[in-house]
Image (cartoon, rainbow, N blue to C red; front, side):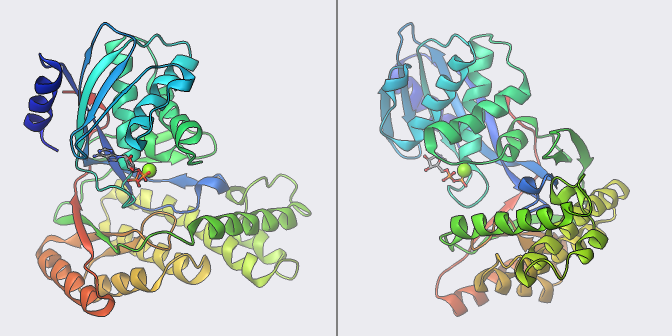
Length: 381
Ligand code: ADP
Ligand code: MG
């Protein structure tokens, strides 16, 4: 992501430069498959994101240039003006969602560039949506609060991209804060900043470059398992609406009434919600060893109980252990994507070198490595 590059391109295409806005991608330290069970997630914004230059152009059209793709799009802002290119549909969707909420958006020129790897699970799409939601709100003085900016991004995914995502990615992008993760209650949407200052450690993602092909059918099956267990528990505990409300004792009561597979799935979820809460307590005390143990616990649970890992991710997790990484787990829904690793600084080089070398040797493809820092959310530059 290069401000000069964006400026130069903008000036070349549209004349005088405009205002600059930035929104980040995100990581999730712990809390996977907890969202649809009413539990918590623990994302943080990262120091990689989307940078956009924007200026009102006095027309009713948007003229947009994606610097990284070297592509131009021009489109109107009514419902049937949707552009072809997927990157432009994100911008269009954000505009439409703002307009549906009564916001007045006029034509503008824009160029943008980002350094969030696409499709690696760091949510380049949320970075893109949040950048434009935040920028348009500011430029057109719409007075939309930050929560609604996140919801506008989420609605864009739902209605203009066809991805039925939760709120976490857009929320983390908009609300991110340097030195903090955000404990988000997926049921009430209440949130709390949790300090994250892992002195002496680095956070690094290792991308297995495996695509999540199994993910959507497996995802639906996991959800069905969770629902089946809730139904069984409800016979004794009608107040339990989601696995969030259940504990291991309640689960044990229904052991004979649910399938072994459903039992395992629910066991993972109930433990994962607790692991996240324990990790937050440890973060408040600055105990990163415990945080790391919880991350390994998540990996184990996702691999053995929830069964959403894969050979490549398990391999990366084993290497992390071997190299003295204090916490490592698959990040995201599973079946591919990245592991997130909390690595002692003095072990960082060895870990990265070993992971790349051994993974490439075993699988014949090179994993990608993304070091990240936890940074601030959406902002004007
Ligand atoms: P991710 O997990 O990174 O969010 P998605 O598939 O949800 O992956 O979003 C990736 C899409 O976002 C791309 O296909 C593209 O349309 C858009 N996008 C992301 N980064 C950029 C960029 N730097 N330039 C143009 N479009 C981008
Ligand atoms: Mg995305």
